[in-house]
Every structure is written in C-alpha cells, then in structure tokens.
Length: 110
Length: 110
DNA sequence: ACTATATAACACCAATTGGTTTCATGTCAA
DNA sequence: TTGACATGAAACCAATTGGTGTTATATAGT
Image (cartoon, rainbow over all chains, first blue to last red; front, side, top):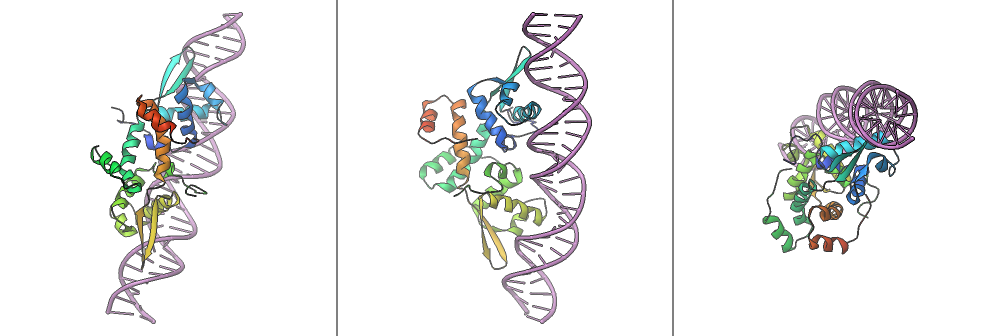
C-alpha cells in the first residue's frame, strides 16, 4: 500500500537538494513548518510545498498539534530506492557478496 | 573528481523512469543510440537527450565505433546514492548492524 | 470578543523538463 | 563520389517545477 496512487514518487521527491536536506532535518525531531523554514532561504509557503511533495511520496508524516502541523521523517519508502540500487551493486563491485545479496532478493522493474 | 562541475547530478538523473530503465538496459550490454531507441516509445532525439543527462551525471560511458556511438552503464556514481541512503537505514531498522555500518563510514551534506 | 499565530490554498511567474521536428556532420558501402 | 545511415545540434513547444505574494481558516491567548 506504500506505493499506490502517489502523485510524486520517491525518486522524484529526493531529486531536489532542499528536500533531501529536509529529510535529514526531520530525522532528528518532529518539527512544525515555521521551524523548518528557519533552516532554508525561502518562504514558508515554498517550504510547505516541498513538504507536500515529501508527504505524497510517503517520506514524511504529519501530526496536528494545536494550531501547528508537525512533520517527521518516515523512512520506509526509501526501501524502494535501496532495492533499486542493489541491482547495480553488481556493477561496481565484483565481490561474491554482492552477487549473493542480489540473487537472494527479488528484482523489480525500472 | 567524480562529482565535480556536473550540470546534472545523480539524484536528478535517476528521477526519471525512462532514464532508470535505460540504466538497466545498458548494464547488460553496450548499445548504440538507435538500438536503445527501440526500447522506448519516443524519438531517437529524445533518447539522445536522456543519454546526455546520464552522461553528465557520469552514469554512462560512450565509445565511438565507426559511425555509431555506443553507450554503457557506469555504475560508480551510484555510490553517492548508496552513501546517502545509508544514513536513513538507521530509521527503518534498529539493528546494531545499521549503526555499525553508519559510524564506520563518512557522512556528507544534503 | 479580539488579536496574533500557524498553516493551507490560491493565483501568479520564470525557468526547467521532456518531448517534437528539422538541419548539419560524419562514416560506411557501392 | 554518391547515397544511405547514425548521430548530434538547434529551434521550438506544452507541461511541470520551484519560487513568490496574498487570502482564508483555524486555534491560542488575553
């Protein structure tokens, strides 16, 4: 259910450096939009839109607390990226380990 | 020297599903542009532009053979992605292994 | 009740993206 | 050397992206 009917996928979501920085920021602690904005040279509205894209990709969870909405990292969708990468490990290391890791896991499209 | 002065970075390059498919295709064998085009529902020129973006990210190598240019996967830049991902492994598995893997490698920005 | 705060939603804009067709160049084969 | 093939380069276009400012709504504090 993690990757169904998402407008933005994980690959797209992490393509932007601002969003990658946000993910690291939100890995430490849950934060409201205004606090997040303090870490970036852009308007709160822009930050909010980045957060929406991350949310669509399932990479952040939001929680309403009073008048603020707090965001937090949800790392699980990154698993898709890890799976994708695993295929290519074969090509930068010839170690038997990589081959073993690959054949004992299931492959995918793309 | 791998990641200096690139117009398109790895994260951007793999954001597009067509380019991800190309990388898998070119992992098996070196292929000229026309052959590659056969695998995609778009013009040869469009394929060529995707290949240029992959080349800028260092993800493919080209080799001129006669009148054709053959492309092949160059997986090494994907290492950056792996490094980036490694940080987040901490958050989807609490195993000591992940922590160990993290602390014994160097972290980076973004 | 009033005022300030937190956020989302909306309308707008310039730049980039992903595609197209056309043109130019280089190479192979006859 | 003439013609076909392989590719890159250029000009163009619609849609998306990443940003802005403004407006609307809900909640908190007094």
